Amino acid sequence: MESISDKVTLWTRQHKKSLEELQNNNVIRIKRKHLEEKFDEITDYVVYLYKWFVDAAAKKVSKPKEVEFPVWCSISEENMLRPTVDEVVYVLEVDKSEIIYFDGMKWDYVLNHHYIPKDERDAAEYAKDLESKGFDNSFSFINEKTAHFYPAERKKVMDSWHRIFEIDKWDIFRVQANIWEIRPEMIKDILYYK
Image: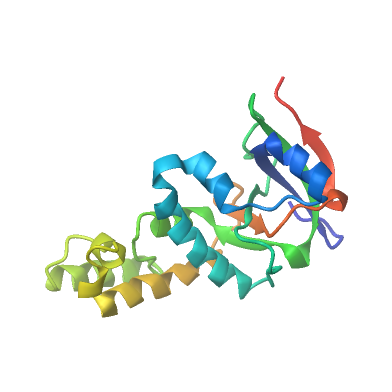
């Protein structure tokens, strides 16, 4: 969590190959190939949403031009992803100005192509609006095969996605953080699988 200083401790789990990248390039950056290794056949689906995130997040914290995708981080040791046989955890000390905080539960709405309501009333109004138009859900509005039929609905859903950056409740199980890259001076420790 945050301290009195301008630095914050974050945790991120990355593939062991990142250690070589750090040694060879003096920086760790997430590239499409990393996502392909992780997500396999759903890579295109994930990349489409990550690109949306990158564009939105770059408006919050300036993105270095060499960066393709963000580094996903936990804000607490209790809730961090643990090291595995193939992955290490970097314990980072990051300047607050470099961190993009977002609501991970709201990110799930984005992953599922749904509208993110402002509150319960807005959710009820949106559900009523969908029903009045004869829609079961908002998935078709973003799906590339059908989205062109619903440009206004698509815009409404995608405009709501910016709410992921509105954190209603600071909770270590909800709030996540992203940074654009990992530099050697950020690394306080590296945790290995035991």
